[in-house]
Amino acid sequence: DADVTQTPRNRITKTGKRIMLECSQTKGHDRMYWYRQDPGLGLRLIYYSFDVKDINKGEISDGYSVSRQAQAKFSLSLESAIPNQTALYFCATSEPRGGTDTQYFGPGTRLTVL
Amino acid sequence: GDSVTQMEGPVTLSEEAFLTINCTYTATGYPSLFWYVQYPGEGLQLLLKATKADDKGSNKGFEATYRKETTSFHLEKGSVQVSDSAVYFCALSPGTGRRALTFGSGTRLQVQP
Image 1 (tube, rainbow over the protein chains, first blue to last red):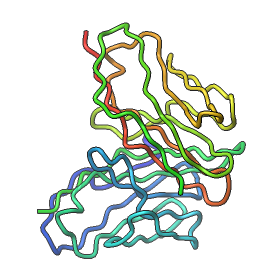
Image 2 (image 1 turned 180 degrees about the vertical axis):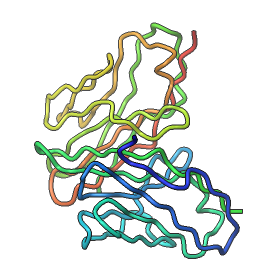
Image 3 (image 1 turned 90 degrees about the vertical axis):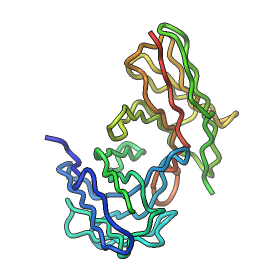
């Protein structure tokens, strides 16, 4: 079984709808992240959480919110989806070790907002 | 702030050709450097990493050396295969404070038989 799972894998929705993307991990890591990927822009950080009570905005948090329900679960919400939020969304986890902090990624959720 | 710059793609090579994908960075302190690979339809996988100056990361025939004097972490492979076709991302993790990754924009590699 995959260590980092994301649901759904694909989602098509309409402008104005509320959407939740979910991420679960079995790696036992405290740190979790949400990124979006757009063609030619690489990955940009939306939110990150270093433990259940520690949530931080990333580079592009406007229009998004998150919830860290447990160490293993980190959800991303779009309160009112808009077309420019059409993108590939990745969840990642990490745990600092040996002076570095390697991130492990889920398979991604492809979101289309019409 | 921190930033990572990669060469633009796509890079198209014939099988067994030599590969170089350039990556330079701007960061304060002593960041860790990473190369991630994304195969079609999949998430990102760690390819290799280096945590201090002059370290060489290597995996699956790929290598990259952390060059502090030139702030670079170029990815190389001596003989590419069709199965290496993917998007490659250079990334850094800050040396101090909170450690969210900063990614480059990615370089698509296409290897032709």
